[in-house]
Length: 201
Image (tube, rainbow, N blue to C red; front, side, top):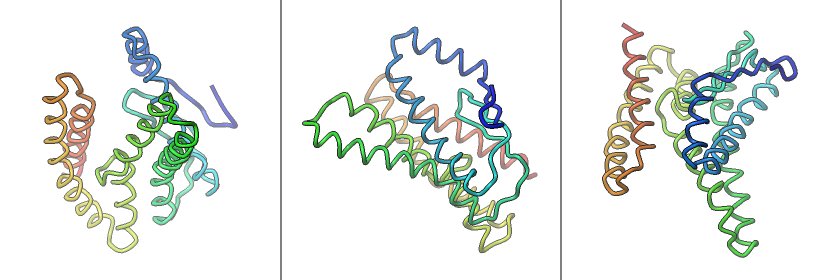
């Protein structure tokens, strides 16, 4: 499928995960999360379009959305702004929904999308690559350091944040008895850091 010249592709793993979650009764929460993630990516996309650098392809996968760039090279400052655009959109939506929640007499139907957008914003703001916060930190550092030095600093900061994240995920798992969401995110980020370190050798 193409939208304004941008190819949109849905991965098989995402479709399989969606079918499983909907079949297990998590359809509503799954859809809210997907819509929140789409709005997050829309923030990145609109920012890229404003810089006249739209992606050539968007792949919707189980681990998130991946954009293949069209080839235009952005400045480090522009890359930093693009990295944070999705987080900004999530926080903006959560804030607007929270205001509406207060004026709507505490409609509990608004709580799930508020928490979904807040959760996506907070997690993506963590300074761990490949999350938006990690990418923003890297590109911000590239304005002041060499790319290699910026990469080393970003990796060290990411590792420093990843360790307490692992501990927190285990605490949540033990207390809830079933919630492994943060643990899965932590494992994914840990694997990403190890893969990055291996690629640099």
